[in-house]
Image 1 (cartoon, rainbow, N blue to C red):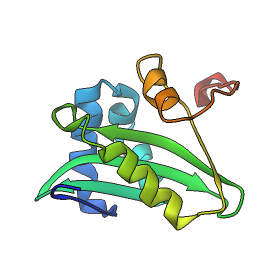
Image 2 (cartoon, rainbow, N blue to C red):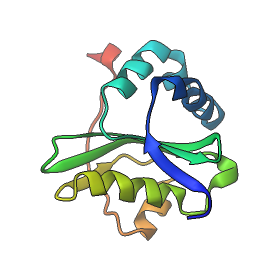
Image 3 (cartoon, helix red, strand yellow):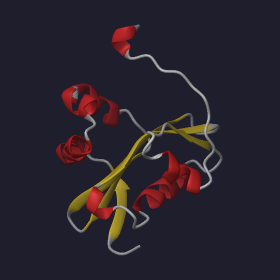
Image 4 (cartoon, rainbow, N blue to C red):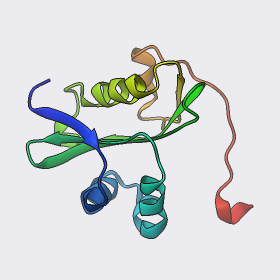
Length: 132
């Protein structure tokens, strides 16, 4: 795939990840920076997509290693969308845990992207920490 390389997240990537979050309007991740950093440091897989020296996307997931690989966030820089980077990140993440099913949440704007790639919708519920 072009010049895109996928590698593991390093703590010094965090500022670039937060810049992508900010540009996407994911303000909760930006506003809770310390918690977001802790989530990255405790996530597996945590992958970064590089175009040369530039971080152009990422995937942060959680897994039990056997049954479920849950994708918490998948984000590609707007200028790099449509090049298969997100699919490549998903492929690399799943190759780490090949027996797992893959689950993720989608927004109304990303729902079509996942449906076109064969993902099925499922039903769930959510409460924010402060609502508990």
